[in-house]
Image (cartoon, rainbow, N blue to C red; front, side, top):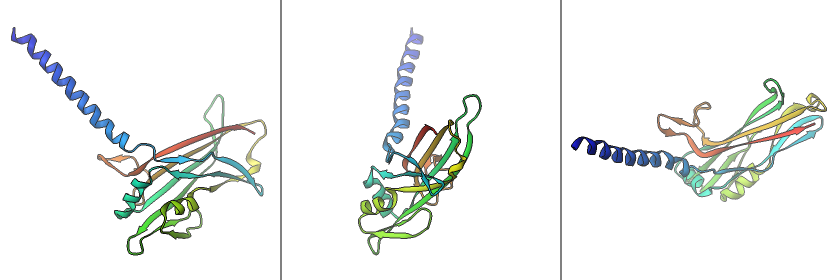
Length: 195
């Protein structure tokens, strides 16, 4: 008569432990909820060159401010790619590029610094929100010659944006031995269009 009770107790304990572990594993994911937002990307013909334009907004400024004031430099990493869509085979890559911008905090001057993507110029401001608006609200990246587009073809512009600690290795921005390199969750966007 003792034998049937042991598995039932074990089953309840196991179920409670499984629920606890599931909640424990899910909680870090909800804590690092989506913190980046992209403005609608667009392609433009800039003097015969193909350019992708988009903006990045940070939703959780409090978390970002805390990371910066604790001494971390934060890097915005953007991977931009343009593909010719194929119905029967893999999409062919027309252009791929990376864009990065570093945000820092100077505790002595009590101001934020932002290295602009592309030219490396550093701008400063005591208001982090105003600084991010100046630096990240409109980003532009070149994707080669406009002549590479063929009329009647379908294309896909793909963006992947991450906010990570500046010293995090490029390929290891997710999790490494249970320690997160991510400052904020990244976001992706895909724009498919016919030319």
